[in-house]
Image 1: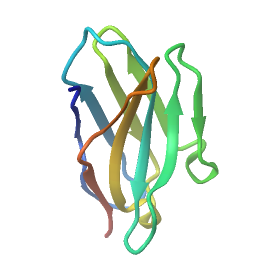
Image 2: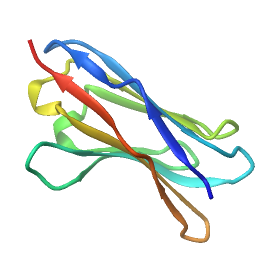
Image 3: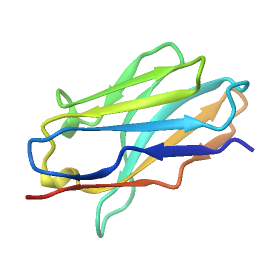
Image 4: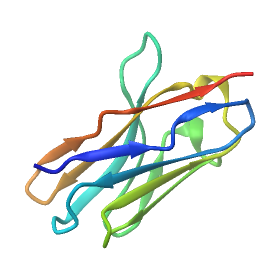
Length: 116
């Protein structure tokens, strides 16, 4: 069973930056889409951004121009560089990945708090 582990969350002031990382417990499995979701207080979990195995990225409108997603296929890792953070970015961020045979994996989440 592949496990995804997120890291890099924390408390940051508005306008600051954080980099979230996600690492899969196995490097021998080929992951297809990797993505970040987030769940803000009192809201449903929402998709934030994803990246294909080939490196194509997509972002929710509210983070375009501020967040940058990258991955290392050999290491099965993914990074989300978050700049110009806003209080509304406060959420628990979850890593997601799927495989060619539609297996899906989720991390346990990492808290990001943007506050002065």
